Length: 435
Image (cartoon, rainbow, N blue to C red):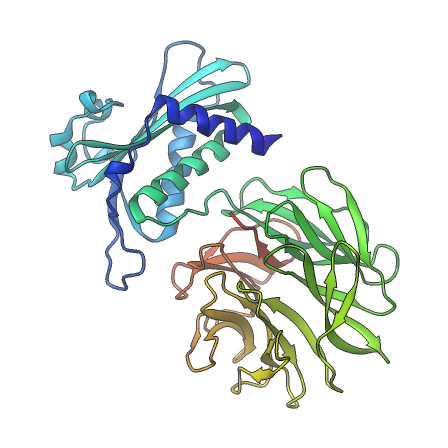
């Protein structure tokens, strides 16, 4: 129901603020290594006449958008306090003091007006302007529950990112992860920035390795809730859960195919030896992919569905390999290090992130031909379990650099590392949702 509501809101918005495709200039080249941060100012949003904004949502929503854009690494957030706030009261084109914005070097401005419709309903008008030319770029009007103010702000952050970079923003995405409480582990969900944490499972057992379906509606995971490490699928919006693999031995490390019809996983059907299989979700048919005396685990599907990356000890130590699903040819990808694990293919298909042992565990990326490798974390505890954002620009990972395992996010070049979780319990195995 929530997804349908948001869709209806967007349709309404386009009628209120006509789509300005003619004004589709790309302001930020996010692929350029020399690009500078784009200066933008986001004054506190205005409050329409009517009911009192008791929860200060106008200020909070501006803050959410500010933090979204700042974290992206592509924006320089200008302090609106640098000029008289009385001069920043304008919300529409004819009310904005454009000459004032040039004083602080702003190239864009975000304005907003909040209306409290009832005790728990709000309406918000948000606009983005080119501050140098004094031109409207885009605008949206949203209505929803007061508690949804963060989701509304994230959606407009996506709109800003899209219009200024030409790339889809990921500020409405979520991250699933394992969280240990006492002797148990369960799956939790959080917004990409660590806010709005919610518990997904409660089995008083070990529940591990969350993996999102490509449509974002389901999460596959392994749980010992019935004694054996079996594989389950949980529907996010209904809560319905079903077991899809309960083979004797392990049923672990799921990875969805890009079409959502199959899951690659690790089973131990061959005298207890771990091998990679493909499970068809609909009819539960199995296809065995690897046949080796060594341990083969942790498959990750390529976005073109043609290959699977996995971990194997067939060379003596765990290393990253790829398997061509058509020819069944296996290629070794990593040679350096004594323990490389947890490969995950980037959504753009160009690289694979993994965790490798080098002065503790650290996050690495390697090109799919194995020729280019880059270490992203250095001498900050153990850094493990990388997961790509849907745009391939960021990685989530777990780290114990503070003494407890927490979830972090960083740029794909290793910069701008930020802890997003806190509180009781070790957090690990993050899985970033699709857009």
